[in-house]
Image (cartoon, rainbow, N blue to C red):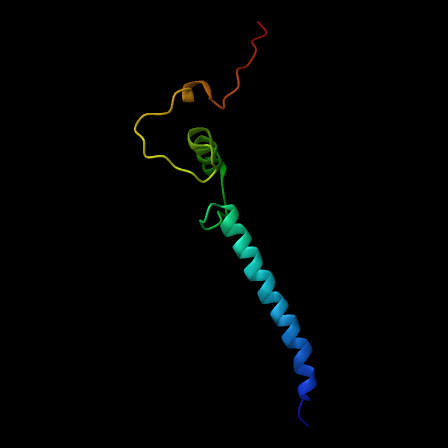
Length: 86
């Protein structure tokens, strides 16, 4: 006995919704990352470089080819000073 064709309609709707959701999530990540692929598996070094890029260009994904840092970059050091107690 075959499967009635009416059973394929709900499965088609379910599969279609998975496809719509996947494409929507991919598009959202793509446009929120300045039209670049989303980063994954970031370690501490990647986060440090991303913070540097943010301070240089004002964007998490922006990169600069300038040989000279912009004015004021030397004062935007992310390292905080420690207070000495002795």
